[in-house]
Amino acid sequence: MSSMLGTVAKQLKNHPALIPLFIFIGGGATMSMLYLGRLALKNPDVSWDRKNNPEPWNKMDPTHQYKLFTVNMDYSKLKKDRPDF
Image (cartoon, rainbow, N blue to C red; front, side, top):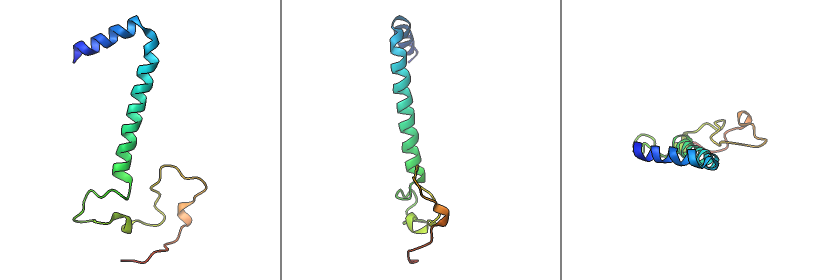
């Protein structure tokens, strides 16, 4: 593994125009992994514990914000509009 990193470092020293490519590819991969982790942990559609909580979307408070970005939406003013099961 260290020989591969040494080869990459040598190539970057010889071709400095590749540095932005490595930065943007690495940043994009990191952000996509962070977003997938957020979806897996925060999204109510994902159920990790089917035995104790088989339908997590039914136990959510209507004021709970689970979307990453919302436009003109105040979740604190929402009222419950669904029945309890």
